[in-house]
Amino acid sequence: MSLAGEHRFHEKFSSEKFAMRALKTMKMAGIAASLVLLACTGRVDAVSIPIDNHSFESPTVPGPPGNTWFDGIPTDWSGSSSSVYTWVEDSASLTFSGGDGPQHGGIGEDFGYIYQDLGVPFEANMTYRVDIAGAHRTGTGHAKLEFGVFSSNAVGTTLGNAGFIDVQGIWTGSGNPDADDQFNQLRDASFLNALDNNGDTIGSLGRMSRFDAGDTPPSGNVVVFIRHDGTGDRIQYDNIRLDKSPSLLRGDVNLNGDVDLNDLTTIRDNFRLPAATRSLGDLNEDDFVDMKDFLEWKGNYPFPGAGVGAGAGVPEPASWILGIAAGLLTACGRRRMRREHKRD
Image 1 (tube, rainbow, N blue to C red):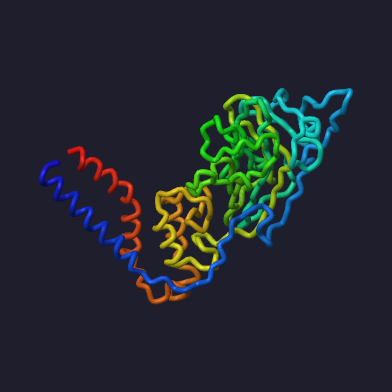
Image 2 (cartoon, rainbow, N blue to C red; image 1 turned 30 degrees about the vertical axis):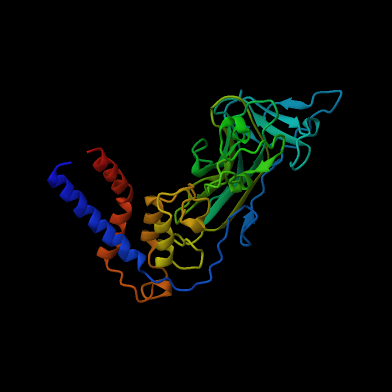
């Protein structure tokens, strides 16, 4: 590196170091926050939205000596095409466990999906969450199961973060660090998201679906869907559920009802790190803390207003906030510059 380049590097590094040091000196107020890991049944104010044939008990699969499966789209559901390869199967005959009733559903077509129009419109400032159970069948290859919500005016277009269950990843031979070899057991995406066998703070076998409708909700009705991710083999599933609840306060990391510097401190401490919960700074539930989370906090700070809450008495000039943003934006750039400096 040239002398001029080295000077610019040290000047830039010094300014970033000063900004981050200033942020670290903030005194945090003692607030008893209840850190909540959200699940479909985890919030008192959540209201379930009924899904017809949610556990795929219809049509009834003929038992022995007849078939143990039915090839076709389940009752009350529609398919992405008239020929989508779907079925309903008798779980008991496979010794599957953990389902809601003796049957489960499956899709064996790349990118094929089934969906159901629930006949209810989206509501403003509501969060819609979908959970579903999936399983890895012994001796069979599987694809990733995806699920979530569409609008009836845009069937096929996912709203929010699609949920997933990596049923193939349950097999240790897949290389998934959280694999646990629990075959033939139907388990919820929310449960699989909580598994962390390798201790990296992120569950890599599943994630619930979440969509925040915002101030202007999508037109059309709520449509739930279950989809094959296109990587071959099959997906198997059961017991899909949907609920809605008033949207969480945007930017509120610790769920204490305000957006203040305590929330920013958590984002800073976990910036560019995997995160399994909102309490670690993952505001948009994409399992990572990054600029998207910071910008959501910044766009809603301060709430309920200047001089209220834990941020009371802390200066909030625009230049100060922009300085923090600059420090966060260049955190990864600083690491890259250090590597380039070493190469030179």
